[in-house]
View (tube, rainbow, N blue to C red):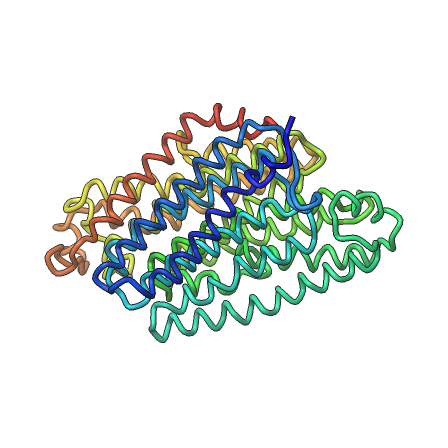
Length: 477
């Protein structure tokens, strides 16, 4: 039986992330610039400790903390591990990109603060906890995006800030309306009281909250900032912002819709956002020539796929496990794609990638696995995610949505091929066709991002092969 003394340990991963962020922020001020690697090591240790603490707690029975406002269950446990693991992988980019920079330790603090916010979003069982998690996950992103200190980075940061302010206000309006109607902010009590409230007002408030969370996820209609931020920010920030916030936001959407009454039309709203994100993301990505902007639009599309099991929430037992499996596969696969672009930062046009496979075969192989993985090609992890999410939609009575998933997966193949094909063309072919591939001595490869790309691509394959074990863990709610 759990004692009161043991209860603080329930939030050990969150406490580690918050304490690590404060330590990095304050401690970095006293560490010389040439020794900022100490803060990087500290950040890595904190993330590893958070992963271990979350893994140890994973088999424990589901419970809550802070008077039922925060859920500590398998879903929260998986979100903790995913968010901390993704941030740990992203740190590899920092070794080459921002090592020795004037704001290096502050960057690590921002990463940890935003990771803590994403985890808080995933476990929020109360509207106020949801709002706090949203703000904690959002505010550090503005500084991370603007840390590129370029015109494009400043524009992306301003656009993200304005979009965040708008959709943050929408989320708070929805929270205010729901709490005003019911007199409570707890999800358990909302589920009991919302059926008696005016359904029209509930629908409007629910749309406002979901729209706010879609800003964090990067889905339609709050997606406009994503491609600009992916293109204009540093590789570290671009990789982080297209991965970690989505984990918390999508789990938060799933938990939130679970308290809405069946009389509201929230499944239609989420299904519309899913289809719009999938389709718009794919169509916009096809016309991009910058690899990072292409991946930015790709992440918008992936949010659409990830919203599919949310539509089936409460209607299929496959919904939650499929969401968690897909999130795991997307996390490692998306990181692999961005790490490849970070390894060759000077090649900011798809045409520049001609002949790369001849000089860096392992990097090209990682790119192939990442992009075909995002399409949903077996045996990668995203393939399992797409199959299970489509199955959940079919099982929940949304067969048409499963068809949309299949069609959009096929469409996405064409713009990913626009990057793969030149990469695997020989340098001789590129020259004869007027290509302008830069020699590697003129455009050196960053070693740590290259290693990260290969590692993340291998993890994508490993998670795909071991998806059955992951499914068993995700289904043990």
